[in-house]
Image (cartoon, rainbow, N blue to C red; front, side, top):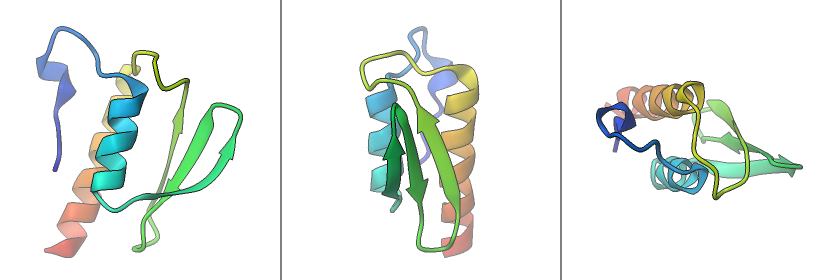
Length: 76
């Protein structure tokens, strides 16, 4: 499921990006400080930084959307 958050006035929270990654099949590989590294069984990796209650930055939203789109393309 790819959610395009740029359509809305309020940016998503980091926790929402993490939820979207986990629902797409990504799992937490490691955590160091506020950086979480997610890995997919296909070998794709993405890092999300920031505390879960903070607003996500545009580059983080794009990275997560790209990663979810890549995984969904591979499954087809």
